[in-house]
Structure formats: structure tokens, C-alpha cells
Image (tube, rainbow, N blue to C red; front, side, top):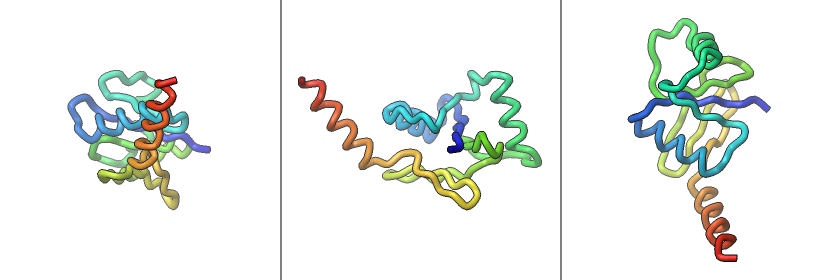
Length: 109
């Protein structure tokens, strides 16, 4: 299974939504990093993924295995990453609401 890394920035509304959503779901296959805190290793991955591009929109989604950019699709109900011929669901509103309901029930006990 390939991992996705999402690079965002503080003050970017979409980036903050994705960061919060991923934190709530505790995904192991998707990691969020902010540009303000990048390490040399992340900069190398980004440089390779952005090879030949002059600019791109935030947030940037990179397939770590392929070292290629993925297209991010964000709506109110779902966040998707399209990487080549694969589409990966990163966040789904209905799933998060169900998870939050279960967590609140378990807090009562």
C-alpha cells in the first residue's frame, strides 16, 4: 500500500480542513505536513514530485512510493486523491460523523 503525504500551509483554509479531518480519523496511510515545518527529507520528495512544474495549488498531495503528484478533489462531503489511474478516499463526512458518534457513546461508559 502506498502512502500519501499532503503538504499544506498555515492559513490555507482547505489545508486546515484536511489537516483536521485526517487528525480525527487517525489515518496511518496519509500524513499531513506543513511547509513551515518541513525537513530536508520532505523537501527532496517535493522537489522530485514537482520536477518540471513551475507552480501548483495548495495543498500538494504526493504519492510517496511513486514520488508523483496526485490531484486533490475536495467537496463538502468527501476528500479524494486521484493518483494516476487510482482514486483514494481520504475523508468522508458520513464516516467521520459515525466515528464521532461511537466515540461519544464510549466516553459515557
